[in-house]
Length: 135
Image (tube, rainbow, N blue to C red; front, side):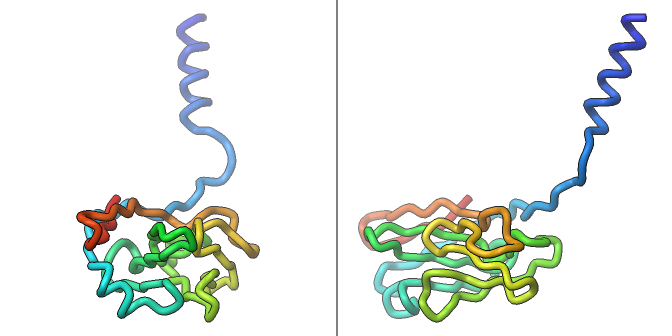
């Protein structure tokens, strides 16, 4: 009888309940940009880099002179790989497929249907001249 209950518990735990959630897949990212190049190419302290990550990268210089990086792939229906676009202010980004909005300071959802943050990447400053974005 203990054997039967053990199997039953394992089956219940493995099948779970609820809807399987979509996620943004992990893709190897290792991108470098100099601070000079960032300053020249960034608009409103935001640099959009195509062809990295799932849908491209967004690198943002924060008000306290730090940097954050996100994948452009919206966290709303990520299987569609819809690329968020930076709003004119540079403070938010919009998913053109759903209208969801995200903060460019931390990637947090700002407007429904967004419920999860944008995928973040690690940013490090190397030698005070080079930004490295990686996961």
